[in-house]
Image (cartoon, rainbow, N blue to C red; front, side, top):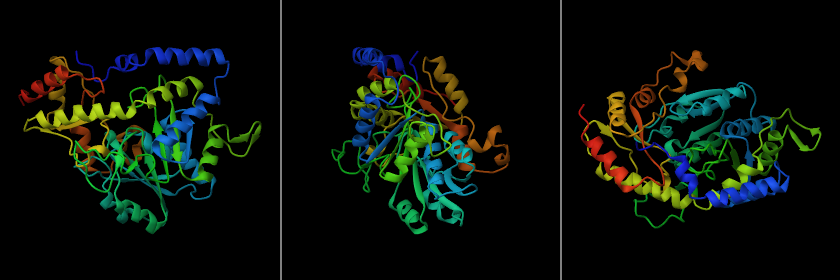
Length: 380
C-alpha cells in the first residue's frame, strides 16, 4: 500500500536529533515558556520575515487569538463581519464564530480553489472589519487587488497559513524551474497577521498539536501573547479573560530541528507535483492549475473527478491510499445548521469531486509512477 502520508518515515530522517532534543528538555526540568520556545519563535519569525512570532497551542487557537486580539484592541466588536472563503477547512469559520463575529462566505476561484478575490468588494458592508484568506492545499491566495481593497476599506487581512508554510509570493508568475525563490515574500508575512498549524501532518509538523501567530504589529503581538497565557503579561495579573494556549518546550525543540529542512522538503513536494502534472493524462481528472510554482508548497495534491468515489475505490484496490479534503463544506455542516440552505455551487462541486493523491517529501519515483499509471488506466 502506498500511504497517503507516511509520518513515521518523515520523522525517521531526524530521529537522532529529535531524541536528543527530547532528552535535553526532560533533563532541563523546564517544560513551558522556556528557552526552546523563545528560540523557535525567533527562528520562525526570521524564516517568515516578520517582527513577531508567538507560539501557541494549535492552529485554531492561532486564528481565535488573532481575532480576539483585534477585539481587545477595539478594532472589532461582537457582530462585526469577516469575509472568509466558503471553500475552506471548518477551523477558519470556527475561529470567527467563536469570537461572536459573523463569517461572510465567498465562493472560490475554480482554477485555484482559493477565495475569489474579484468577489470581495461587492460583499463588503459597514460591518466588515477583516478578510481572512486561506492558502488552501499549500497555494498562496493573494494579489495586489486584495491589498488595495483592504487599504480602501481599512480592513485587516488575516492569513490562515496552516497549509502553506514556506510558500513565496511574487507579483510575477514563476515557472517550475525558476531560480528566483529569494525574490518575494513568504506566506505568513503578506497580511496584517497570520495563523500557523503544526499539526503532525502539515509540511512542518510537530509530534503533537502546536501553532503560531506571526505579525509585524507590535500591539497585536503583545495582546496575543497575553491572551494565550490566561490573559496575563505578568504572573497572577490578568488584563484579559484569556486562554491557555501555549506551545510546550518539547514541540518547540522538535520544530526548530525540522524548520531547517522545510525549504528542501517543500521543493521535493514540488518535484513530485510537477511530475504528476506532466504525466497524468485522463479526460475525467482535473489537475491543479499552477502559474507560480514558488507560491505553492503542495501540502495537498488535489485532483477533481466527477466519479470521485469510484476513483477512490479503484485506487484503493490498486494499493494507493487517498483522502478527501473535504467531504462536507462548512456551510453544510450540522454545526452551522443556519447556513445549510445557502448555495455555493463552486464550493459544493469541489467538495463533491476533490480527491487528494499521496504527497510527501519522501514519496519515491516508483510510487509516483505506479500512481500515474493506475490513474491513466482508470475506466469511468
